[in-house]
Image: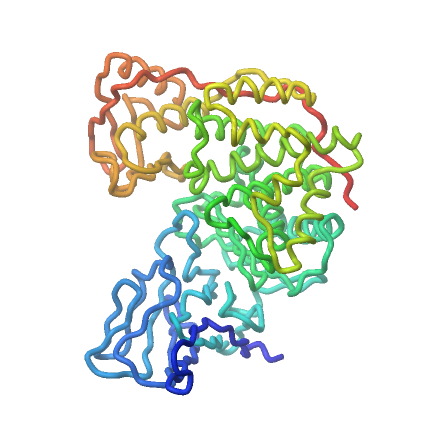
Length: 529
């Protein structure tokens, strides 16, 4: 099939009434690279005065109407006069947003376009990417269903098992790390989870991310894994970043099996299931294959355990806590780790977490998909997962520690710099904000995720000082200073990178962080076939 031929997907109209009286609207869409983005043209079968985009979550604040007399607002294109053709110039997204696909991302002089972002509501939409001289399209079909790369063919490397696209500014060491993990992960998951993939996967690596997250990845139904890196330090990443990178692409590759080509019953309401499986599966697979080691893998699990403990606290389980932010991954990993430990013990090491997922995915591919109920039905009897999700919040962590001890796990409280930083920041933002809060680590320091819901802390500021301490370099000293002022209900003083200073409330005592380290535990490495 030619590379510029893209298959049609149905963004279906549900017919009602007299079918003969209704003629389904259709649209053909073409995209070409342009200065600072892509030029996308829609051709409608019948004139209209407005059309609405199918996916409302895509950020379109950098989409510019190029057709006179038309306007775009809140995902709707309108005109006072009927139109059947319009063009929009799409520039790359200005920022990463949690759990939202990027509409357009730079990859050197090429781009990744998110096909569903250009589909129209209640309109059968066909998308064709038109490569210019020296350009290529990957994948060669079904671009309307997910990500597609459009850019220089020289950036693409084909190997058995897939293709790798690396942006021009990507350091060779980073490209090699990601490429090696991509192909090794496919081999491992193919052997343990079965089923040849229905497409040739494509890995895209770019250092042109707008941030604020240091690195991020996602996967779409086209088999494209987009990995995006922000900042200029990727030739020599910091050690703590490098530890996370060692399993990053293994996580994203797992989603080719558990997130695409199969129905996720609870994909939006319980994302911790598929995200936790991908993260934990990556840790086990990478440690088995030698991409990381046991100490690094257990350290990652301990970090996730502490993150989950911080997110859930001693409150009874609230599903809303596990629908966004880092808790999705933190508690998701803890659930999978518990299931793995229990399955290995119950079968004397014959079965592990991959046996559980292999069987569940095989059943789900019949068309029914999988969800939380299917996963929980596959757990061992009286699984400790019940403690996490069903037990009383006040008893949760002591009970879980006792059950983990019976599974061969010893824990010790040993908070580190990151634990002090996290405890202080989450304690403070929780008192100033309505709704979920968090923060990112960016090259400049700590960037609060506060939006417009946090009073004087709103606007996603980058923090320079809290109580005259750098929250990155002096995390424990910052924590102690905040703790002392919170004990007196005194306001907390912030200085932001833009020079502003503010004071925010702290009327609740700040307890010392409880941060476990894993001192002993069964090996995470397992069999690879």
